[in-house]
Length: 504
Image (cartoon, rainbow, N blue to C red):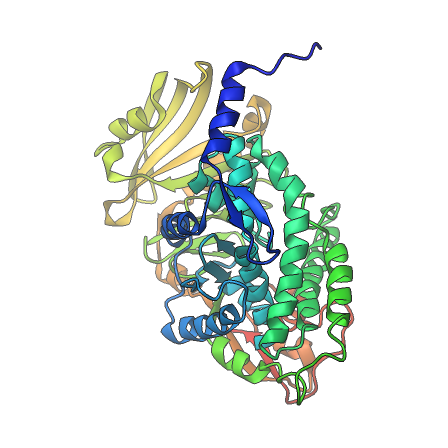
């Protein structure tokens, strides 16, 4: 392959980008750097992206919990390198074990990650890390690099923020969308340095607020235990554990992060404030999260084994034997064991049409095919098998069903597969999954009840006793309760009578 000369359009684009960059001072390092975002631009872009994040995730409707997290965040931010920013701290309604930040002072923690933290100081470590991303202008630096790769600043803000997140759960799906762009190379190259610097800043902000910087070690240990739990679960299913830990091999491994943060914490030994560090606030923290929804919420619909139940929409489905249900904010997918076929179910917006035929035309824009009227548990449905022309002008087979559910809400169920052979193999189960679509029954409504994270004294029977009272899957309940309480993997169990987290 011959090397092409640097083209005039690319040279001009690069020149225009450089012209658009301003020289700003990094508040952490004190060094000057070229950036497409000065502080006002950071604030403006962060505000725009903030609205998208709230729409995507939703907010935990608990004013007391939001106030607790905001108060902690504001105290940390006041002792940061950018105390002048108007900081915003939000608990997102997501079971993902995740936390991230946007440029301009927007910091998010999910209720999912809060379920696994053991103390206020642990949560402060997570938030201090995210504050560090903002104070060191990591979002602005990423936006500058992604602008070079053709992404807009707003896209860089949202995708870059999720790329900085901890990465257990659905965040990786959004990050993988970004990875299809050239900008992924910049993410991969830059995130190691950013993550390690944010860890160091998190430890510094803990110390400035009289928390022991060793709590940053606890935070990384939580991530390591998650990896171990996931690996053990994979082995129990006869599968190979996922390698690499984080959502992208770009991030420093948790082993690497743990080694470095231990060294950072060691640097603070002998430098504690007069009277020593403050207590870790475990009792306050447990009180704050008592009653927090654990796992899927009512608003998102809940997965219970092979069943999916969505009380607000009034619908339920059951996956075929051996299949699993993936519940995302915009769709649910019933996936086979081989992960090469599934039924994707999405709500249809009103603008897509008022009849099933209009919806099929507007959603799929078919070039040929046939329709068949069906009835799914008393609900009117229309099945379509045919072809459409995709964005690249290629013919593409389509098999889908439109069904009108309760409250006259329409849904589309798309038969998806890796190839025609996989689709043919899975067709009986795909049809079985479709036929399970129904309005919620009384039994379904009982199953749709979300689980809660409560605080209780540790019993003499230990986690085995707690597991018997828990709605968690029996085969993993004891191990999952250990994980939630930070003792998975051989750590000594709590003392009898000590407050622990239970799922009820």
